[in-house]
Image 1 (cartoon, rainbow, N blue to C red):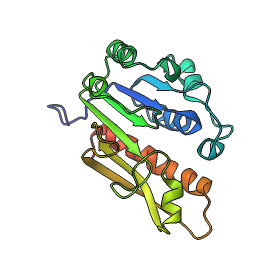
Image 2 (image 1 turned 180 degrees about the horizontal axis):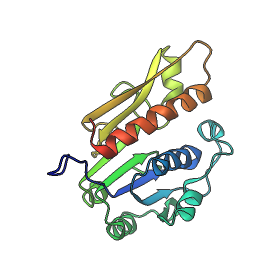
Image 3 (image 1 turned 90 degrees about the vertical axis):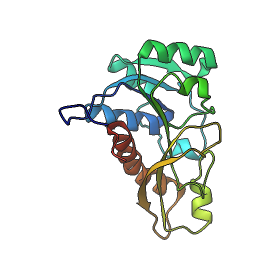
Image 4 (image 1 turned 45 degrees about the vertical axis):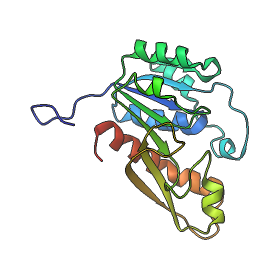
Length: 195
């Protein structure tokens, strides 16, 4: 997508991303100058294997507050509330990098394009937190798959894949931390339409 002078338009982006991963992704996108106009995530993240990887990382709500970006607390989630919030953000791109909810088509309809950044190869490893399944399968590569959000879990058309190498002896946390770079690249390519 380019404008008549050949420059990429500056998209108005809403990011749904939870926990430390979401905070690190948001910080990276803001440092690159992307136009993030809204952020949604969980303020009180429950501890688990995935979240322990990101202990001490900034949370998306804190970064959104500091950057004066509209924040929608995932604890208030309802389809109508999210639609109303998105309308207020006037976003044209929705990027999801971790959500506790399936994103309904009524939400997707509020933007020009809605993309999920899935932290594993699709269609081989769908579902929430696929890193254990990737490692248990003995894969030597994982990465981030960007796909259009549809009603089918991780089933929309694939736009791009950013690979991440897996090394012998890697733990879930090793793979997740290394995959963060692929997540940032996939988000950047999604925002700029470079797929």
